[in-house]
Length: 434
Ligand code: NDP
Ligand code: HSE
Image 1 (tube, rainbow, N blue to C red):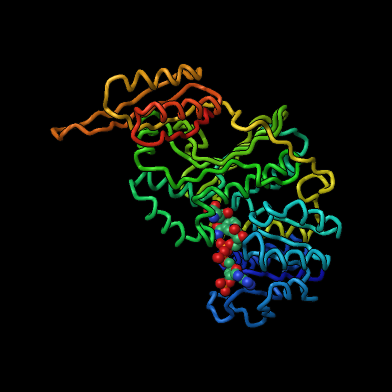
Image 2: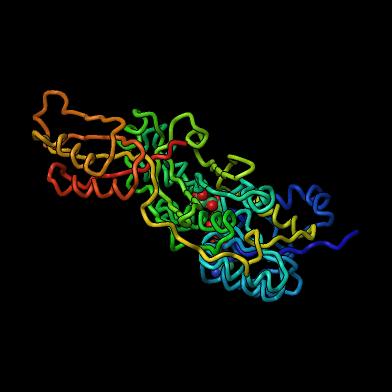
């Protein structure tokens, strides 16, 4: 019988627990597919005494994940702690330096240090696998790195955060508050340890930075991403968008064009009925545009213990089979420097919500500001005062534009605000007409 591959797992929380479940339930299946048994031999977590629903008695316990990484009985180090620095980074570096393959689900670490870690892994001739880091259970890393290797990719975008998609879906379908649904997403194990990373768009940005490097063969560049989260999306926005034929999704978008690369993360109106719009709940969707394959969309569970653990196991089995690829699809030393496209040059439609002061000439002034910036309006909804109450000082005024350049849209909104016909800052949400 071929010798077993021995795993050391650091982090026994949501994802680590899921990996233990699959290893226990699919022991034979995994051994058959890997061509050798895969055995857990050592673990690390913060609290040794915590009941994790698994018998850990035969395993070596390390309080310090770096010691686990250096444990000579460990063949493959699996990092499921999280965080861009601290013990996760130290332990991954220690394992790679010791010449051990690493599997990680840690997109924050890769977005901040991906290129350096890739150089370290490739310099040592070992794998650094991270299928679980992007879009949970969806095999998007392998699809781009292996399945689409014969294509030049021009665009990759999608719903990359399960927590945000769950929140936006429940708000739309059940009219529940943002805070209420966020709590539920946390209890289901979808959210990051600090959920600001989810709702603030940072987790999507981490994943997008990794996808961009893979898709376009460039250095990971998190700092180049324009990031906007979903914290300011209201039930009114969701209802208004719905009335106008759209759903709101948090998208990560990366485009490679002649002027450079554009990466952005923001809430987005997408047409109802489009595949991305119909991706609801904890599901993620990733769309890739290749020059020969055309458009391709992958959809699946983007967070949660078992879908994410499924991706971790696929990386482990690749290592057991002796398969190793360049970490970002091309050797790390050949990743091209990142060239950014000019800012705010993206062209698309926009949803604009204004709180209009009810006085003569307001609508005409707004139309003038838009026309001066060459912006044409696709539709307008003005919600008037209702009932017998005294007239309110303001009225919600919603408009949707035809395609326009973002720079012009922002300039028009600044003029509208300065004109004195609105009671608060205009709010704008981009539209992707997929
Ligand atoms: P959890 O918070 O559920 O688990 C983190 C684990 O790390 C816990 O077991 C914790 O120990 C352990 N830990 C924390 N600090 C230390 C330390 N200093 N030394 C040793 N162990 C430590 O996180 P998740 O399982 O949700 O996430 C893990 C990783 O997977 C993160 O990078 C996350 O971004 C990523 N990920 C998560 C997904 C999800 O759906 N949850 C999906 C895709 C990726 P203890 O249990 O004792 O507190
Ligand atoms: N917090 C992340 C999400 C976990 O909600 O998508 C999966 O990466």
